[in-house]
Length: 328
Ligand code: F6P
Image 1: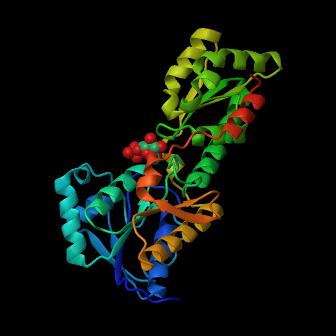
Image 2: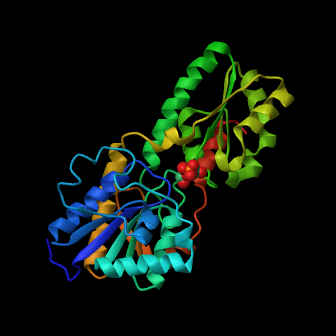
Image 3: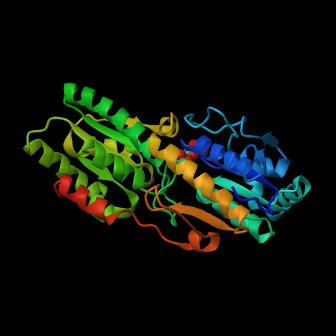
């Protein structure tokens, strides 16, 4: 593997954790080691960079973590890093530690932090990891597939008891302001209806009563409603169903369980390939880039400013499919 002018890099995870973050850290550390680059783990994200919270990493420190959820470097959301004073403290620590670049693994907030740091002259490469899958410049984010599968497994279990009692289930799925996860999960569980923030006209609350009524007319006696957290509270949706249709729904907020668990093969592979690519970029002197991918397989990169200014809509192909599956 080629030697590089880059001698030392840092790696951190920031924002909400996602299954596969550990696999990405491992790939960064191992790739750096093969290139003769020293690797420093920065604990607790940007907060840790401000406070000089570091751990030296070598290839042995990342053994047996490829299949573990969470992040061995811990993660945090830092208000201080949003300030100029916080960023200057982080820059000073980069200089003190002799870091030639940083690989920042996380979501949109992490990349906004990376952009701020790059404006102070620090080289940064972002690796997208969030169960929300809402980073505009990449179709795929590490953790999305595992989280979707966790949600599907939970909802399949809920369906069993809803079927037995002939009830209506309202399940709230994470995603912050985006409906990617809810749409994906809703399609995968064969939901009666899915509410997502991006498509309020087609999939808003006003369409719910008709969908449940249609299901009943078609012979169903239990109903599975998936609500993206950005589309509203599952409790409110449950109350609406009670008031409108006289059903007695059961409400479940899946919550943080969606972020945990062993990353699946798709996320381990995406994380490994993206982590590898991030170090290659820094080693080649390319900086202020975000690693991206269409499917988790083809790995490319874009300029961080360009990447953050892109808009990522919800998949229209999935929207059309859902409309066909839910009958309206
Ligand atoms: O961004 C990941 C995410 O899990 C979102 O889906 C959710 O809205 C948020 O983080 C929850 O944040 P916290 O872990 O701070 O409760």
